[in-house]
Length: 407
Image (cartoon, rainbow, N blue to C red; front, side, top):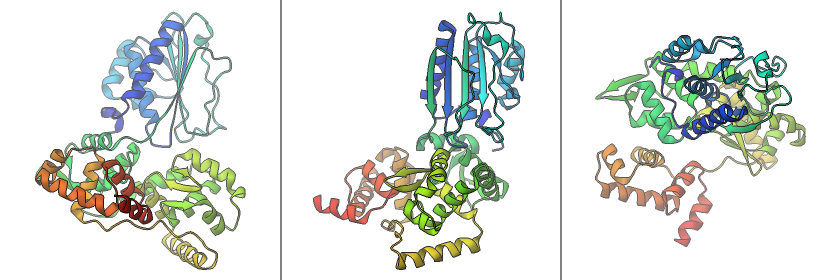
C-alpha cells in the first residue's frame, strides 16, 4: 500500500505508449522529433515521461534532463540506467553516444512560466545527431523550447483512466480486491490516478480500511485529511481569481451555470473570462453549453470542502436567496433513489462487466441481474447500458419521462 505509482505497472496508457515508441523509433531513423504531453494536475504526465524514459533506455538513447529523474524511477530502472551510464541529472552525453532524449517536465509544482527556461544542451547542436524531445506541461502553460525545432511533432492529451483500468490501479495499490462499498468511493475519483493514490494512502493512514475474506472494506464515509491537504496544495498553484471561481462553483454543485457564478461574485461573465480560461486549463471542470461541469464528484467535494464550513453555509444561503429573487438556476434535479444493490449494479455496469460477471460478483443468478437491470432501465426511461450510465451520471427527469413515453 505504501508503493508509489512509479513502482506499479502503467495502467490504461497503451495507446499513448505506442505513440511514444513510434516517436522514439522515428527519432532514431530520421533525426529529430518532439512529443508534448499535457493534462490536468495529477493525471499522470510525469509518470508517462518516466515510462518513456525507461523505454528510451531500452532503445539505446542517452538522456539529458535538468532534474534528478533517476530518483523517481523504479529501482529496476535506476539500476539499468546506472549500468548503462544513462540518466544522470543534467549530464550531457558525448556527441558520439548515439540518439539523445531530452526530457522537460514543466508539469511539476514550482515550474511556473517565470521560472522556465529553454533547455538546449550543446549535444543537440549537431544536425547529424538524432534528438527527441519529450515535454510534459499543464494545459494553458505551453512548453518553453528552443526555436527552430524540425522533424516529427506529436501531442498527447492525457485524460482519466477508464473504470476498468482505474480499478486495476486500485488493486495494484491495495494488493487485494476492493469491496463494493470501496469501489463506489473510488469511482467518484473518475479515473484520476493521483486522486486514487492519495485517497487510498490516506484511508490506510487513518485505519479506515480493513481486509475481510480477501476484500478490502471501507470503514468510514469521511475523506482522509491527506486528500484535503493535497487539494489545497493543488489549488494554491492557481491564481486567486481561479481559486475563487472554482470554490464558488464547487459549493453550488457539480454542474454550475456561469451566469450564476458571476451573479454570486457580483460581476459579469465577460469580466470572469480570464479566470474562466484558467479554470478550463486546469482540467478540474469542463465546459458544456454554458455550464461548468466538474471532472468528478470527489474532486468537486474536495474543492468545496476547501472552503471553511461557515463560509460554505453562507454561500449556500446566499445562493438560495438569489434563486427566489433573481432567478438563479436551481441545481440539477436528483435521479431516482437507488437501493444499495442497485448502486452496486450500476457501478459494475460502469466497469463493463457482463450479466454473468455481475451475477458472480453479487452472488446472484444472471436472470436476477437481468431483472434488476430492466427495472433500472424503466426507472431512468432508457433502453441500453450506455444510456443508463449517462442518465445515472446526469439525471434528467423530464428527458427520462419523454423517453419512457416513447418506449
